[in-house]
Length: 207
Image: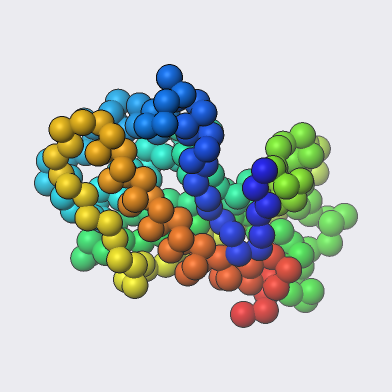
């Protein structure tokens, strides 16, 4: 069981990945099967580009391609994506999250009697019982103001994994992808965790 924290946004489910492999052998990998199924999405020139390779591996490792994903995203967040800038190709991380009315200043916060807010999905699962996902109110007869935010951060300080570009056996591709993902998971929690905590966590609104 994973205990999420206010600054832990993503994690790798490596044990689950091995357990759900076809043969349950040490080198077997559910993630690896998905990687090989989506090799056509990885252009030849991107196979040795650390940023482009990571964006591809991350997309495969998360939903909707893998569900549950090799990369698990904290349940109360909407999405965590890796993209490349259209301007200069730099690697960016984008985090989408619902924002409750409680994070707004009192002077601009709508009263609940007049405007409904996100509700906790009490039937959803979270491995630690906290950080449950939010959903739109079930009562659609009342007005609702459902706020969300996208946090976009550059990843200029990351030392990205260099993929080989050619993989004679599947295990080498899996190793490259998992090493690339490990850098991203550590980096996202490092540069974004405290910022998300200031947005929606216990420190919400105290930048």
